[in-house]
Length: 300
Image 1 (spheres, rainbow, N blue to C red):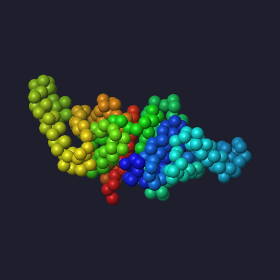
Image 2: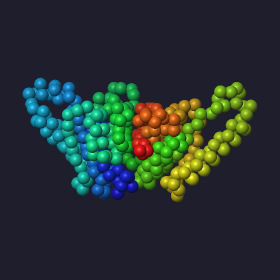
Image 3: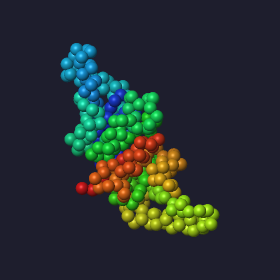
Image 4: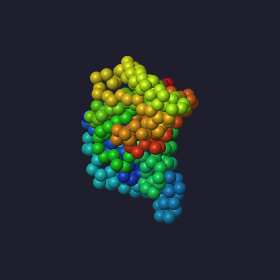
């Protein structure tokens, strides 16, 4: 049984019959396997699609929904992913996918929404996130896991990016639990912008720079072990990473350690109180080459 099944007792999965959505379903099954957690697999037909089908095929909406549901059940059965003892529900409804998925997650009080990072119509596009996934990231009422097409196995290298905010502490907690569950290497990194980049020749104060980095690294580790109860007794690689931009620094570090999962909080230390999704989180989600878990802010 996954260590995450107690945290994620109800999971909504978006299905559009693409390979990434198949990976999303596989990840959901992996999380709930051996537990009483529930999976709700959802497929939504756009209003325009439904109008086209009723006009061209002469069928009632109910018949089209039944046919799509039959197709979905067959698609899932052929995948061989879903185990018999899993509490598994299938829903096919009319509506915009992003609105439908987030509304379903809210209605079902789901603790996790899992999507393929790119949908079935994303094959020829250069950006790393689909329209539905991006929209859901901005309005999800719960944690959101975006799974990349290439992800098929348990996570092996996990990166949690921290900025000392309360939300990033929660992100580290989630990262620790996934690392335990998957027996993965866990890295916790703090990205900082060097002030000395604005000055002249850095060779003139190289020793001061190295002392500053050493002191910052010590402060970070002291903070982690004093403020993050979850990491005590857990093998963790703590590091600081120098970058002129937080987003670029996180992505660079993820690439450097070959991370297959990046965990970020939805709201950073500098985010406005009214902002549902921090700029850093949104950019990491959009630009990350690996899967991303976005941890929702638990502040009431």
